[in-house]
Length: 130
Image (cartoon, rainbow, N blue to C red; front, top):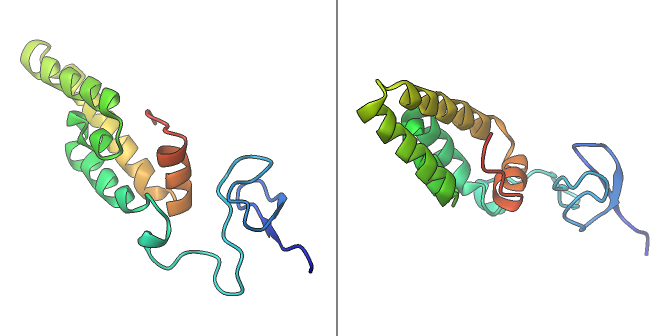
């Protein structure tokens, strides 16, 4: 039986099919099969279902940190929420605007990543900020 290889979409190294993560850079590898290599729906990539919700919440309500809670980053969400509240009540809204900008940037980042890259970065590796 011949060994099947798959190419990493990130670093282009060759890996044994079915390994899941690239042995060189750690990126998620596409599944090897005879058909299309990308999943056809979000349910095919576990965790990708949170991408759109977190992205939209980051853009719309980013300063409140609700997108952080959706992804399970409770500490980061509390930091954003408290900073936003304190900024509105005590500091003329400047910290609140900063949290809003952070939320918008993160929301755009979530939505522009592929499903696999989003899951690898924010679900598997738990990257809390940017």
